[in-house]
Length: 440
Image 1 (tube, rainbow, N blue to C red):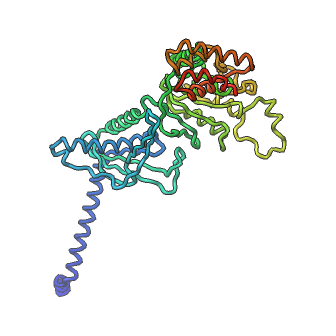
Image 2 (cartoon, one colour; image 1 turned 90 degrees about the vertical axis):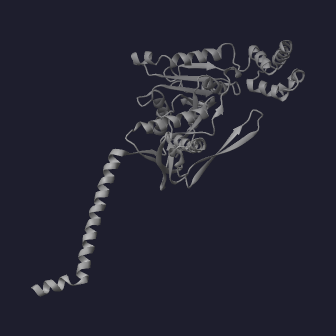
């Protein structure tokens, strides 16, 4: 036994194996200790915020991170302390958004906005460093915008969750500055709303000339509705309002709605009921997901749902492809059990008589307003908008217009009149001389 013990102790291979075993055991213990330590640190001192691409804040934060990098560069030029000598690692991949901006003179300029692309990098905000990671799922699609599903994750050493709330608030403020003084249009994309193009310049409320007090009365009615939410709730009345503007083409119905939205600092959600794939369920979902401070606009409602007698005449029993969206589905979405609250809907039509009575009853349409062809008041008012201080010539123009209208028994739309003014915008006398061209 003594001999065997000495033989084992003198064997270098055996001793090396023991040494390796001890090292391996020690490494395993170290790794486990480090893992446990990391988990404790991660639980107590590391916080993360994950933003999926379907969340409205996703584009805000992306744009904010891009602008924040530029601010950091400016700060580093003016600071000499240790904090600003630590240079954040910029994104190794970038994505670009190209914006086209219309100038006052009608020309168009463009700008390229570089946002963090897919990948990871470090950023800095209010003296804190963040690890930013943008990932993309190859096989998943975001139904909101049709693009691949993405996630943006921000991680930092901190115990204060409010820092993420501050980032979100600042990102929202930056996004709001881009929309200040502008009108945002939304269209339906799948079962969600998607911004259509760039924000448009708001139209001045007095740029649309309607007959005496029509514009002012509608504005007053909407304002009165907006400030009386508690009155509706206390009485158990659904807090929603529907408006129907009817009249001939070119009378200014849609233009007025745009001007009204601008006056109230609202946006517009354009909803096409004839859109391919529109169903009762999809419509109900869209009307329940309207972005804040937005009108819903249903244009040419008569084209989607004529009166039932007419619809019956035009529908044959042999039809193999009935419409996916039904009149009953629209009626339920407007004021049924599944309809939303705090909603303003505008409908337009050129043919009031073609609409089903159930569609325009009170509760679905609360205000019906005729926007007709131009009156004497509108003719004069529009003339003076294009040719200021030409009071006498406006009377001559009005007199000629009335004479021709009486003779040929015709009327004029606001769009026709505006087109005539634009055609001869440089010479007021030519506007009067060529008045007969309005009736060609």
